Every structure is written in structure tokens, then in C-alpha cells.
Length: 514
Image 1 (cartoon, helix red, strand yellow):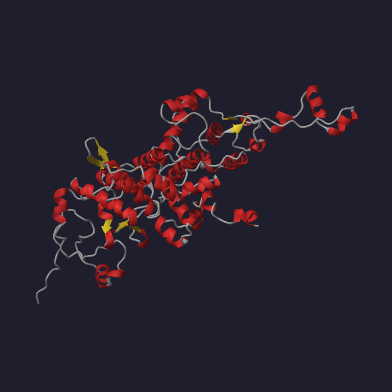
Image 2 (tube, rainbow, N blue to C red):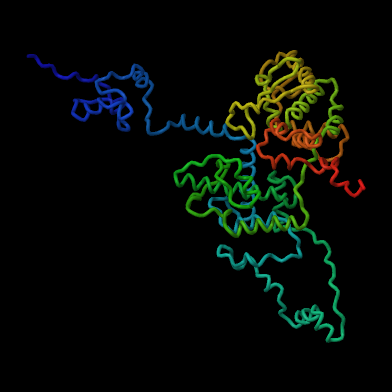
């Protein structure tokens, strides 16, 4: 009886270890008998006697990749996708905040900002940018914090306790009972004059930050700007710690909002572009200074101090129906007039689109339907970062808005433009050029409001606020309003119902109705 040796697998020249075997043993035979789902992890799909895939020679010619690590090209491509997947406004906001941190630190401490940032530096940043009254002494309760230098803040009692005979006399004169026993009547409290607001930022540093473009104007920034910059620094520390721990933090748009509302440490964010890293200790080696109890308490009380002074956040005026009609009346039959009219009506009528959504609008997502109306599919927005196809992202364009769009589309077709951006820059000679930037949408709104003579401060967000406010005035159903605006929070939509939306209500006229 003739015996045959088991067939040997073809040589593989060292490609894909694990697909080669010199012989079959009992374990290998048992492994073959298992169903595919029961095979141990890492076990090859094909048995050793199976020939290699027909495309393996292609990898050999081009140079087989290492499955355990990325090439430099693949890593660069992955980083590019991560950057392009971020919201542009968020990336620019993070970059601006970190550039300001680095510039301020260099002017204040004479060096480069590195992570982790000590707690006293964050506190110094707050007092440099938070406006306060000069006649109010600092809060003594923060001086006892273990991370706070003893000489940085004197207790209030040391600053106010009488330390001389003159001080004791003044203290006695302030006591009505003691003053009456000395034959004098009680002294009436004098009303304090309104004190000017001050910060700890030296004027020459403030001027230098403005001169080099890190600040827009002299003086203290808005409170929301200060809290935003603290939140960005907090996120930089959290992401640095995540990298040290070997984890990956998912982007969270609610992180900065949480920091603004509670003045606390925010949720895990994407790394702010330009965030510095320490050459020695890593930011993951120490705690997040923005989550320090002292910083949190100081920010919370700063908010309270601003509120007690009546300092309310500045809000742009809403472009409701009446002022919107005046603005539209400035749009003539010129190319610029046709474009601006179509842009303003598109942004307002589709639910108050954000300026970034208007500048990113493309012809491919605009569909003409019966009756001369249009449907625009919003493929990317603040609440739809992944581009999911959702019914609520289909926005109607009807009535005067559709008529303005038809007129502008005729202009685009006459210039041979049938794809790409809807709203474009108009150069000299009537040439349509590149797509409008988001900032250009803001400029168009402000320019048209000025031409119309509408009083108030306006921006691109006035379109969104105006749509929601007008919907409240006309008692539009809240679900219908939210479907067009894309809001997911009822409280947020109600917040847009400005005070002028209540002018037509009866609650404020109850005394007059009698």
C-alpha cells in the first residue's frame, strides 16, 4: 500500500505570519473542525494548506504594511479627517482662546505657557480680566485655600480692623449708642458714589495685547468671554490627561456650555488647536487647575458680582417681521441686491439659519418642487454633526423667499454656475467668484440694517432670533417652530421669545383693562 506525504503549503516568503505551517497536528485538526465563530481570536481564516490570497503579490510589490502601526501618510490622513470633522467655528474659537492665553502669559510671566498651569496663574487670569469696583475689598474666604499663596490676598479683617487710635475713634463714631452718650447724634450713612470698574491687568500689557491683535479693544472683556477662555484651558488639560492615560475623549459640544453655566470644569472636548504641552511634566501628571475649588468659587462669585451690578449679557436685536421688511426694501434689482434679498429670505424663512449654514448652502441640496417652491436639505448643522438624513432637516422655501431664490438662480445659470455654493462673492464687473464666508453673511446683515435705518445692534444671529420671536408673536405652534429652527430644547426656544414678543400680551395691561 502506497502512502502519501501530506501536502505542504506553498512558500509565502515571510508574508503574513500565521498562514504558514510545516505540519498538521492534533490541535490544528481540531481547530479546523470547529465552526468559524468558535475559532480562537487571531486564528487565520484559511487553514495553512489554503493558498494565499491572489492580491498578496500586490502588497509584496508595493511594500507590505505593518498591521501593528500606521504609516506616516495614514496618520496624517487620519489627523486631517479629525480636523475636517470638527466644527469650524469651534476650532477657530479654541485656537483664538489658546493664542490669547499664550500671549497673556508671556506678557505677565515672561515665558512660554506650558501644561499643567498652576492654580495661581488661573486666578491671576481671572482678576486680570474680571471687572470689579475699586472700593470692594477682595473676598477673604479664598485666602485660606491651600493652593493660594499667603501673600497674594490679605484677609478682609486685616484690611478693615482699626489698628490706631484714629481708627478706634472712627469705629466709635459709627456706633449710634456710643455717639449719643458723647452728646452727638448718630451719623447718617453717606451714599457711596458709583465706583469705576477696574481690573488687575496693567494698562501697558492691555495696550500691547490690543496692538498685536490678541484683543479687540482695551478694557475688561465680556464675562462670557472670560468664562469661555477658562473652559478652553480646562479642556486642554483634560485632553492632555486623556492622552497620558491612553484614552480617547469624544468631542462634546456641551462642554463649553456647561462651563459657562456653572463656571465648573467642562466635559471632555477635542484638543484645542495650539494647546501647548509641557516639555517636562505632562498635564496628565497634575490636576486640572480650572476644576480647583478656589477657581470654581471665584468664577461663581464673579458671576454673582456681575449680576448684582446689573451687568446683563449683550444681546443683538431680533430682526422680526417689521424691521425685516424695511431691510428687504433696500435690496434693489442689482446683482448684489438680488443676492442679498435671496440670502436674507433664505436664512430667515427656513427657520433662522446660522451664518455658517447659509455660507455652506449648495445647489446640490436645493430641490425645486411643484408651484415654484423649493426644499432645502440641511446636511450639516450644529445639532447634526454627522450628517444623518433626518426629516426635520428638510426646510421649505415658499412664498416671497422662493421667488427671491428663483430670481437669484437665474443669475447663477446665466453665469454658468450649476453646482457648488449658492451665495457667492460679487467682484467688480459683475463677476461671481468664490463662496461667501460666514463673516460676510454677518456683514451683509449689518450693512442692510444700516441702509434701512433700523435702530439697534444687529448681527447674523438677529435673523434666527427674529424668526423665533416672530413665531411667538404670531402664536405659531411650538413643535412647528422647533422643526424649522432645529432646536432640541424647549427652554432654548422660549429663551428667544424676547421682551418685545410680550408687548402684545394682556398680562402687562391688566390694570388698564379695568
